[in-house]
Length: 221
Image 1 (cartoon, rainbow, N blue to C red):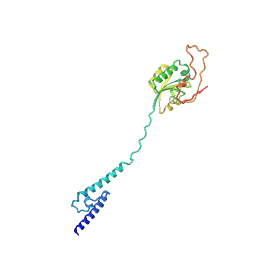
Image 2: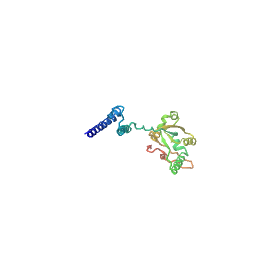
Image 3: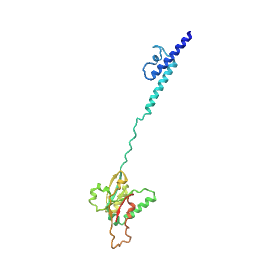
Image 4: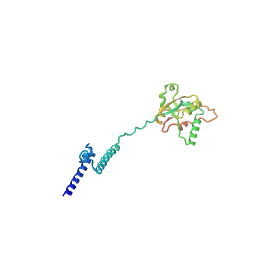
């Protein structure tokens, strides 16, 4: 009879201990010893303390894991594309395309050199460029239509300014190549000289089209 009573007491105590351990893990705030059903000041068995500590630790780790898995950060804002600098020389179309004796040869030689080196072209001819609206001090000195030689190579543009002599020069910035090389529609036509006395052939009309921006359209008569 005594052994049965003791066994029943131990079983009941174990149930109370497990129930109170779960309550503690859920944050009831009472001390472990009291929750396990022991008198204040007494020491519970090590096995029960170990079980309670394990349950508390597991609950704490689960809560931390839930916080770590939350998406607390926003997507980074894409960096804004920086504007690129373009340098240019500009003059009236007749001088640039019909009168200057060496301009055509200089451009075709540079284009050939780029091809041999597999280098991407970084210079263009722009007929009546829109960017001239930003340079009133230049436009008031220009005969129209105007043609600009534009490049991202500032050093080469400086050389071309010295080489061509009768041109105006400056630089500007643009976010895209299309914006940098935008042009206004115009018509270019040159009168053929009645008496050509130079030892070389006259430039053929339209030679400059190889240097116009891709997709550029020009009205011709």
